[in-house]
Length: 359
Image (cartoon, rainbow, N blue to C red):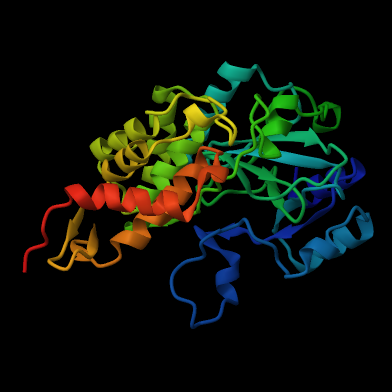
């Protein structure tokens, strides 16, 4: 089946479709018209729209679809996700740890519905779910390698060709028109809305790329957020390792990642600390331990606090610690415990044991 024939079939089912650039001779067709000042190959070959206003032009109209492919012969086919098409998609990317992430979720919460599924050209999977009738944000990262395609998003659909040369394909013996599109399980909807199964609000969003000077803080914060959701230490190690390899530029050593996770796991998992639980508040030394496990400090003769970053000691130790304290409390879902006084206490606690900075 050609991409045009597939696009017409998808439109009959209510999916709004549009043409994507294709891959020819191992190169994205956008290279034919890209600005010559843009260096390097296309970062998303065969995956991006032929025109900029694709959200408005994506359609179910067969006449418009045929015109699209007449003007852009050989295009891959894209489906606009969200309420307009009546679906959202769970995108599982094995290169970024998606298989491990989905296995962990299924083991903990139960199987996903046997809904419409597609195999991607990279060996991943797209799970199509019926739109729940309320906004579904696009690009929400649930865990490493797991993303949601919702409002304003798109997915590449079969039989488009991946840069690897492999074809996207529907997963199953039935014809596309016979495959059901089912509602998502409650636990998946809760995760998408920022709530784990225990109803606790999630606040941490992992950046797509983590620079060298931000690796320790970002990974520690991520590990704390997973611990706050009730995950076991072994699960957290696997998730943080995957993020370290896929998003940190360059990655940290495995040993350092394990130290970060150990620090994050020192508090009781999923304990639901609250402002009123006075004896459950994180102590100054607990916070200091979480910070000093992966950061090194020193003081100069005048008492100014330095933090070691990028191979040198920088005179920003005090502000660095305060930011870390605030980030840790947020990741553990107890931001109400933050105060400038708490930050100052942790600064002083760390400074007392910090070695003297040499000339």
